[in-house]
Length: 393
Ligand SMILES: Cc1ncc(COP(=O)(O)O)c(C=O)c1O
Image (cartoon, rainbow, N blue to C red; front, side, top):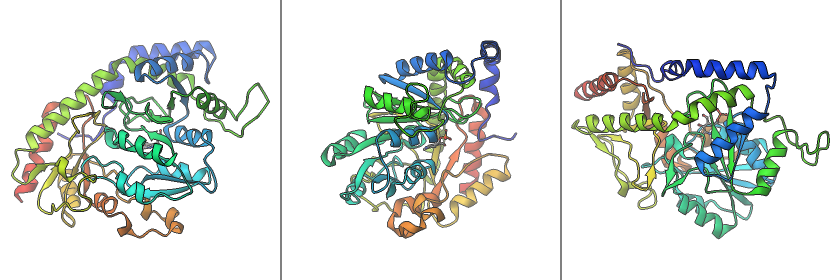
């Protein structure tokens, strides 16, 4: 039987009648952009995350863009962000005219290496943009200490980690802004593009809200240059149907991660990622050319497992594993095959591949396995058996 990397149908089909009701309600209201559906979803999202304010926007990308604009970040400013992330993180920094300054990543949690961040700080550094990659929070005490020490603004790219926690607090609510994506593959997925911004600061919230609608307040008066970053009422209505189920989705993802860990850790050539390999303890010193490395959640983190990502060290081995799984009908993905400091559009920044040894190495080693909440247990067993078979080759 084929194992899909992701199948959105079981989750959405289970809610079909409620989603249709939401559609009918919006259809008959004639109110399709912002309005009461968006207001109501924003209130639920603020209550869920504990953020003082939540603002619905058009996508996770636009959420980052609006956050940067609201903080007045632009030409002449530098923003620290990981190289090993989805393009939007740094793309938005460049789009506001600022310079992304890349930072290496930790091989254990895949998040920002804060010692490297501090090394790359200059007098132009205005903000730090940690990403809570794959559903696990970055070291937010470290980020906030660094920000406090160097007077930086903090935007948490929470696209993959809404609902994750750091020492009991919700990811995305600790910096100046948290930015969320509801792209359909995210743990809370809309039926199209959608995103949100979280903040506890009333002034920043007011600015972001104005920027969402061309910087307009009141009507046809533009104190700021914003854009059209509005959320559709339909997506807000769909998200309101799905949000009450979010904790159930997270539990199911955690169960799936635990089962993978239990099964795969028994294989002879597989080991768990070791906390002592964290970048904060020994940068670039990990020697792992023989075994597949399983992801871990730090005990102080509530991981929501947007991805279950293995490291497969050894030249060409990751690609060989992927080909082996593909041949058996098992879907996988490489998040991300090219680190951002090696992207053509950033070549003018003058980075060399080896400037970020872990980002470069992770791009060649990572592979993400199916982990969506409704993934049948037998299919997880099938994936584990296929990996066991690969290791015997
Ligand atoms: C880390 C990260 N940042 C930003 C985004 C952008 O979100 P969206 O696709 O909703 O624009 C994504 C989406 O995949 C992401 O993974």
